[in-house]
Length: 70
Image 1 (cartoon, rainbow, N blue to C red):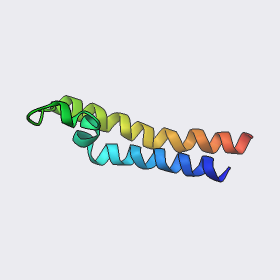
Image 2 (tube, one colour):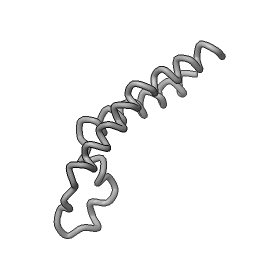
Image 3 (cartoon, helix red, strand yellow):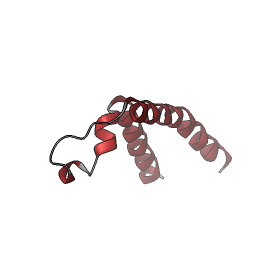
Image 4 (cartoon, one colour):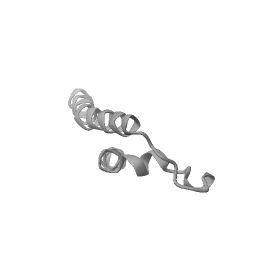
């Protein structure tokens, strides 16, 4: 149970990091394949922030409901 809660907190932390650093999160794991830093469009950054914000709101609600009903 403790391991599950720790895993959920780590994932939640990654989601929060994605919201505050969308450029870095979009390039995560792919930085070495480019000679120069790629240009990320504003719409891609905005979409990433919106998805992360939705996840920040919905993720805890889902897991609180799961913990309450199990």
